[in-house]
Length: 244
Image (cartoon, rainbow, N blue to C red; front, top):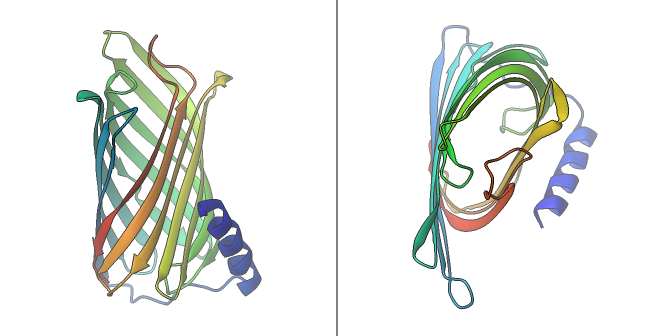
């Protein structure tokens, strides 16, 4: 379902043409918040409990500057044993001029599933918005250069330079909203070492602030600690709150 909505939304947005976002006064500051709580419970062959929450704050200043800050936490058990305890924090300030974007990035991550004690990312790079409008619909691509330091739970560490290609789609039609973000992050010293992250959320909005959401999250990392899984998929249903 997510793939079908993503494809149809992308085609429609491209057919609409390149429409500039609604003008905002140079001295105006806007702060937007969105929070989401999702969960999953299964029993039988595998007993599994999963809770995930995501919160984002975006500061918009005038017509050119924006600073999205996103934090997420995931907690999951299988057969009553802790398997997943993931924490991710990302800040991606940007400067925009028409369709062009200049991004910075700062990130922090912890992952029990992949054996990561902590990971720090810093980077910068350009982006291009093929389509944006005043409803928040967007099709954009960016490619950042990032420096990454990962410290694993077995006391080993890796410091690498990566390219971070991001494809972002945001689409709204009536009471439905689709947001999809895909990252491809190869190691610049060897493209056989790479990561893929994909997050898609479909929301059914009941009011301007509340919605029911269904989220699909997929992560793949080619190099992990021995005995750890290289990929993980979560499908969850929950509720979301946001400010206009």
